[in-house]
Length: 139
Image (cartoon, rainbow, N blue to C red):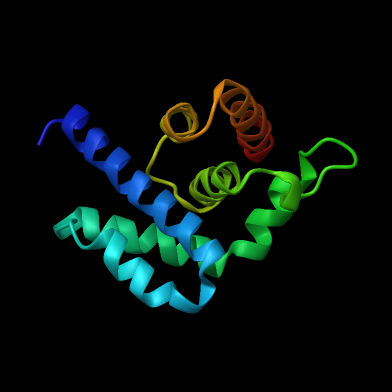
């Protein structure tokens, strides 16, 4: 499989993870069924990547959220961020902090692309700014 095709498929996996995290935020009592439903079209390594991201975000949520909060403007909190942007940031911060195989540039680009599709222009810049700070401080 070519590198471009692999990244396009990983982008689709990240979209599935985004949708699952977003839905679980509003329906925490349906977590297992949401995870199953959002990942049911994935196979093989993509299904594994999906579960890796979901599990990683859930397991490291307090560290991820604390990292995001460190870069918010004074007076802002995670609760003030739109739920979709919060989910995008959580996925990307997990990858930046704990995923060593994916280049940081790819992680940032994927997050910005998700923000373009699922949020808006302001969100794209916001996500890019937060993640740029996380990535540069993590080096």
